[in-house]
Amino acid sequence: MRDRAGGGGSSSAAAQREAFFATLPQDEFTALETSLRQVLLDWLGSRPAPFTFPLIEWIDRRLGGEVATGKDENGQGEIRLQSTPADTPAITPAVTPEAFFAGLPKDSFTPEEEALRDSIFDFLAAWKSQELADF
Image (cartoon, rainbow, N blue to C red; front, side):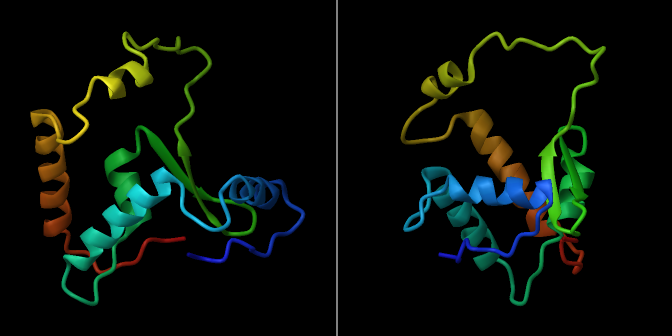
């Protein structure tokens, strides 16, 4: 695992980053980190070497309506959910996230998940840009 002790200035962004990393276990990954790590390693390992992935550009082009990217005052890359304008009423989901995930199969993907997964892998397999993500 990476060393999580990073240099941080007195800025609020640096303090927020340090506060976030302080919530993570020191000697192991969380379940979410383990899943994300494995997906990234599997996908990058399936690409011809050397392979770089322009993560920030991909987020901007493909998830820009949902996820915002930017840099803090120290030039550190950031991603966050897009803000909802104050005059836009919040949408209450018909099903809670917990209920949605509880309804999914435990040992397989639904047909919709398989289709989405295949589409993501097809997109990533066709990616031609050699530019790095801009952090």
